Image 1 (spheres, one colour):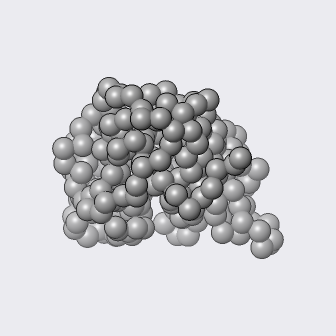
Image 2 (cartoon, helix red, strand yellow; image 1 turned 120 degrees about the horizontal axis):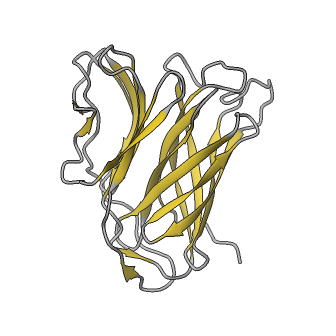
Length: 253
């Protein structure tokens, strides 16, 4: 598996990565029911003023490349035009693309993958993975380092019986807000599950406002998930995440 990859490139706009690693095993209650495939993922474009536009992805036939606004982006080649951080494996890919060229000025967050063939009808499943975030802190300073992006851990729980999903994105101290404290900083997420998708909201006491969250389950019996979040307008923040089933994480009794 290729975990967080960071690349700065030279050719004009290229992103997304090959999926080469098999994921963890199955879980969740019930044998599940077949679910229809509609869209396999989405790309969100964020302008410097915080305006967000969405483009659905309806194909995972070529998970080594992604077309954004007519640009074919590919992480297999380096270039000076953008910076990228994300993850790819055999089930999903997600990432954050920061590009400041004249013909492609907006930041992008995205997710895509192999849509879940079956979704459990009941049971609780824990997922563990990673997340990338960018944008502005509440004081207007950029989140993360000079590339305006940073990474953290994703811990997510899906209750397929109640159709609820909740989780948290965990970042190092001072990532989201400079407090001088040693405690980790967290973004909380809550969403509703519908077939192979979920939608909801994300909030953090360290960031302004509320972000919209969406994502999908990937792999057999929903063995993985990935998604994106974004808060538009003044002091925007946005990112993407992915996680696999974590059989070592015990559900609550």
